[in-house]
Amino acid sequence: MLVFLVAFIVSYMGSIPPGTINISTMQLAIQGKRRAAVFLSLAASLVEFIYAGITVRFQLILSESDWFTDHFYIITAIPMVVLGVANLWTSSDSKSFLTKVKATGRSGFKRGLVLGLLNPLTLPYWLTVTAYLQTHKLISLDGALFWYYLIGISVGTFLLLITIILLGKKFSNIADNQFLVHRLPGLIFIGLGTYNIIIWLSL
Image 1 (spheres, rainbow, N blue to C red):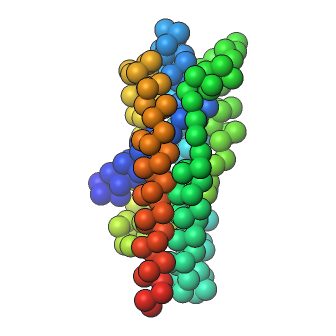
Image 2: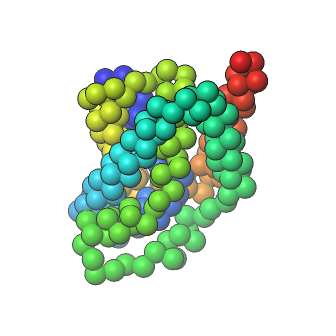
């Protein structure tokens, strides 16, 4: 349950920054196409399950390497700082997303699959986050816990998208809040990365 909850929280919070998936979900909800929005959310969550599974399995293989284990802290610190800086420099506008996302004849599920597959940024995100959680022994992914972790990730993504459907236009106000969706996560990532660097230097 702990592994599931940690994965759920990290996934839910990590899905808040506006992107084509959550903005497309919001657009369908605003247009009154909630059924299509739900199926889009389901498809995107399934793709997230697959991407996260590949990434986490790769990270577990790396963790078996002595070199990787010896440099675990610095290896996880650098991507976190980079992600943090990238968030600080990123700006977004939900209105600009809405003008770019065109309605198509695809079903919501097919659209979710396409958008999910075209969102490979989840790979470095889950590689970094998973490595950090394991570094600080916040989770264990032995045996069935691996699957609980992936399920938590998928459920977190799905429920965030369902939240967007329920919020509708209100989500655009959140998406346009640069501090909430970019600056704050950026500062958190930089803080966590810096903490890892301090630990690495003290070893």
